[in-house]
Length: 129
Image (cartoon, rainbow, N blue to C red; front, side):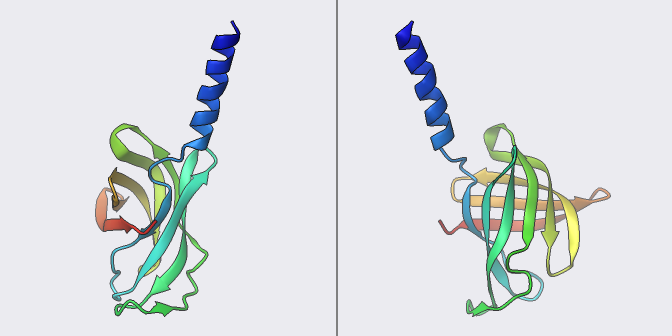
């Protein structure tokens, strides 16, 4: 009986210690103005959220932005096969919020947002760390 209790306890600890593959810092694609950012994705309750932590101009120089510190992605629920759905994505360059989904494949994260059935490809974000 002690062996089963120990195995169950270790399984719980291992589950808590392992991070979801989407967690980390992601570089967005360039926006309509040529700017891009680093978004940190981490758990928020039962889902995942992403906050803009750094902003860059088209030449790759870090810039000040009023959007740093703002939530870009929220309420993304993890599903099998690298799908994250049922969340929202805010596009700073258009100041619009979309119903969003993301698909993870290795160190690439495909992002998409839709409003009233019209979808905007958010491009593929690359993992920074």
